[in-house]
Structure formats: C-alpha cells, structure tokens
Image 1 (cartoon, rainbow, N blue to C red):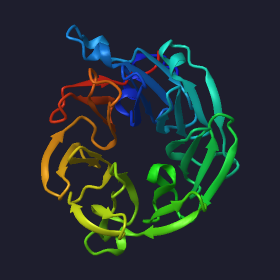
Image 2 (image 1 turned 135 degrees about the vertical axis):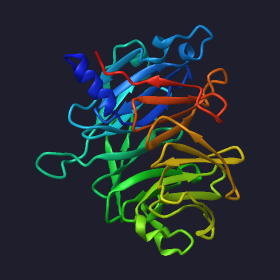
Image 3 (image 1 turned 120 degrees about the horizontal axis):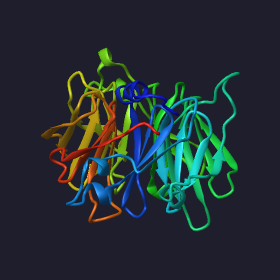
Length: 340
C-alpha cells in the first residue's frame, strides 16, 4: 500500500489490525502481518539494545504481500516465511526479507470459491519429516488443504466441517491434526487414513457452553506431550483430556472470548476480545491479568530461537505490537508504521 500523505498514514495506523507474528529462525527479527496485506520486519536486537531509540521500534523494512485483503497467518521453516490470508499462500526467503529484497519463491493456490475471490486461509501449520515438508491450511471453504512446500504441488483436502476453519494444529508429531471451526466443532484428523477420527463440540457441554456468545471455536492449542487440548471462543476456554475427550478444567473470562492460547512451562497464556493477557495455572487458577495495547488480541508468541532476545509479543487491533521481556508486564511497543 503506497500512502501519499500524512492523513493516509494516520488512518492506516488508526485502523491497523495485526493478525499474525513470527520470529525469524535466528531469533534476531520478528515479522508481523496485518489487515492491509503488509508484512513489517522489526529488529529485536536493536529494540532490546541498551542504546535503543524510537526509530529502533519501527520496521526496518515493510512490503506488501496481498493487495486485495489481509494476511491472517504466518508460519516459518528454517528458510522460508510463509504468508497466508486472501489469495495465494506465498513463501519468501528469510534471507531476502532481511536483505530488504523479498522475492516470492513459491505460491500455493486454491481454486476460487466464486467469481471474484479465493477462500481465505486463516491458519497454517507445517509438518516436516526426513524427505519433505507439508503445509496444512484451514480455509474459508470449510476444508483443510495440504501442499508439498518444496514442489508447490497440491496434495489433498480434508472435509467434515460445515463452516469456515479458524485454527489448525498438529498432534502426535504430525501423525494427526486438529481443526477448530466456526461451526463449533474441533475435528481430530488421522492423517494416515485421511479421515476424521473424533469430533469434539464444546458448546454441547454444560461446563463450557455460553449460548449468549455463540458456539464458534477459534482458540486451539496442545501441550508438548499431546495430553491436553485447549479449546475456546464462544464457549468458555477449557482444557480437554485428549484420551477421554472430556473437558476437565475451565478458564473463565466472563463476556470475553479467547482467540489465542498457549502452554508455556507450568502455565497457560490466553487472550481475546479485550486488552488483557491472562496467566493461568494448569488447574484453572487465574494468576495474572496483564494490560496491553490492542483492544482485541489475535496473536501471542514467544521467541524460543534466541536466549538473548527471549520475549513474549502481543498483537491485535492496534498499530502497536507489545513486547514483554519478563512476561508479567509490557516493557515497550513496536510500531507497525505504513510502508513508505
């Protein structure tokens, strides 16, 4: 997006929504993607330096990936940053982005769902084995699609949802996959058989149901051992025992839907339609509420690629991407400035 004057730049920042962030494999950079189809690259090393300044908290480079819509998901390999949203899924080499010369390496496309548009891609995950890498994507056409990343070849689709898919996650080292949908169901897929093994519907359980907020699911996460699954959205965020497929603990946020959640060490972090990051114990005790800049939160992420730059980042309905150095408070914010 080319902005002609300061008024356009101000409107860009006021209406900005950052849907996804991703740390570079070296841990020195963070990429952020927004509703305008732009990707901004920030230097964490510069932002965390003792000599940091305001300029260090602005993008070192920005570029447009999608001219006709937003980018809703970022994922990464050691080589590529993969951007998904409206239109084709596009892969760019991290080295090219850091050198400020991004060239699209691969485009993974879907057939148009109508005359004018492609199904939007809301979430992507990558399964890597000894011989290849497979990208799985949850889409607005109610399907989970898959591609071979190296060749760009379309592989298959999984059908079973009746409304668009918000989130996908791998389980059991890539032998299975879980998708959470607007239809209120989480489908557990057996990728070897290419079929649904189980279907979970939190809105049908009394301890999770919130009929006044709807049945849709957006929040999905698995613990490292694939023993617990977090599901939330309209229903109350809850931890589900994956072997028995029963909810055991709820994480209650009255009137607030949780869009994202993650397991971290002995804690759970969650956030959604408020400017709060919640810290929970695994038993459901609310430990902390951390105020942040976005009025609604769509992305929380922890940099595990660099001990020196280990931070938690928070992004959503704001031009600010908050950075938490000890996870208990907002240390500073990165500013998603419009491309020049």
